[in-house]
Amino acid sequence: MFAIFVARYVSEEEFRLWVDTNILKKEIEQDRLSTIELNYDTTPNIFAYDKYIAILNKNKLALYSSEGSKTAELEVNISKPVTSASGKYLILAETGGSRLYLISGNSILWKKDVEGNISRVNVNKNGYVSVIITNTAYKSVVIAYNNSGKELFKTFLSSTYAICSDISINNKYLAIGEIDFSGTIVKSNVKIISIALAQTEPEKSVINKYQSASGEIVSNIKYQDKDYAICMFNKYIQKVGINNNERFLDFDNNCLFVDINLKDSVAIVKKQSSGIFSYEYELQIKSTSNSLENLYILDSNIPKDILIFGNIIGIDLGTEVQIVNSKGLLLKKYKSNQEIKGLSIGQDIVGIIYKDKIELINI
Image (cartoon, rainbow, N blue to C red):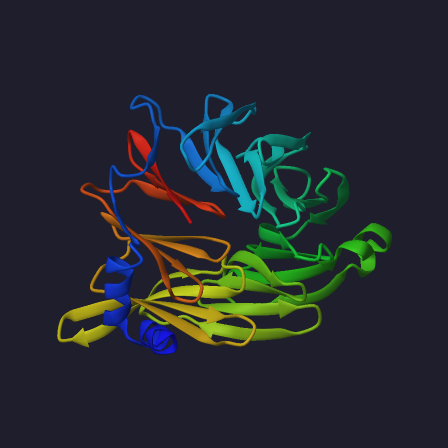
């Protein structure tokens, strides 16, 4: 009987919805959760990492637990943040400034000041950090740090601009997405750099380079495996490895959102025709290792946005949030009686953001 129940739950959408609502109690409503109160008169920056919701306001970073209690308040000289989070780490920097902080748990692990203006930061699950800097003698400079704040190396770009970067999950490689604006047509490339060689023989450190066609723009990079980086372009997703390149996915006109930040998959929200002038929406979750696909149906609800952390996907539907895992199974469905301002997702926590409060969901 248990095997039959599981089989029906996995394969039958209507049965799964009934079980989620009536037995597993996955549906929750506004005003029935732990809450963090917000000041109407301020516009704080809100983000999540690990099991914390972080609120940055007036150079103070307040950290809250899933019960809504403040666990720490950190002094950070940041007003317009650029951030990245992975696992238990948060890298926080000043957009266009020179200061950055690596945070884990309730503590600042290290802080740095760099020469130039920070445009983007990234941290991997081990706390290794890459920082993209502009406004120096070069078009871009990329710096890599280990999790104790030691600078591993710098790479200088004299003819291209660095747009995105990521360090592999085994801390051996740095992938950099670059754009060349020098010609009449924009071009992009992705370079894979050996961190070991960059420290000993920098002239040999670029071990692979993928060159896109004209007009193809790189926008994001995510290592989902120690041997290859998933690279987002405006028309497709490319896998770039140590010594090989592989086209993973081409976009079509029905793709509303594409996100490469899952732990081992790509999330695609697509519009599907279900009749004349009628559409339904679905979330496709495609593995980057074996191309197996999981599907989650959104029916006629038009998503406003999706947000991802680890293997958790938050789907913002305006007055409803559906939280799904990478297997396409519903974890929580949150219903509101007013428009939701935004989401913030960490490893074990989801924040539903309103003007005056944040409601907290444990995952």
